[in-house]
Image (cartoon, rainbow, N blue to C red):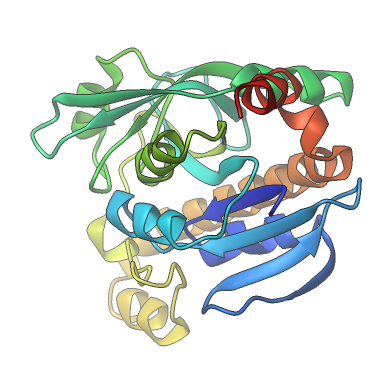
Length: 258
């Protein structure tokens, strides 16, 4: 049995995770990697691509694991969060395509926040909204903010639902990429949603003939660098601590009930 299964949507998020593992090797399925935690535990990292459906399919395909964890970037829904700020989910609120709440799933973010604080990181605890589509406009983010969440993303709902179906603990940690009022032009949303990678040719084509997008693209690139550094630092700390330290109370309760 795996000790920990980690799910990321994007390539840079996955690389931030595998950088904190030892003995990393390709898994037996596409876009999966195996490595070791600081306590020697077995960890599987899965790059799911974007969206809740891909995330749930990817989660359903992994072998038995003691703990599920989603990590990666998110958009801020409150004005005091900045690029690079860290958020751990106490709960995940799933929104449908009409913007209504369709599910509420619990998460053990308190364990991450406590461990991070002991290592000198500030991690905010709160609700994470998980949506089926990118919220690129300030107006769309404002609607999601009405649900009382700190950040918005797309994959936690799918993985959390699979974790609940299996009866295993679920965690989610997010690093803020874009600020609450920031608008991301559609032309900059150039990630291959199926793989989570950004093809270089697509990026060049999106920008070459649109010089008016260069300032927004530069800003987003700088924010991605900040988010990448913070996520790498936090994940290195969490992975070095091992699975028991990540969710000790939930792990014990799960073991007692098995």
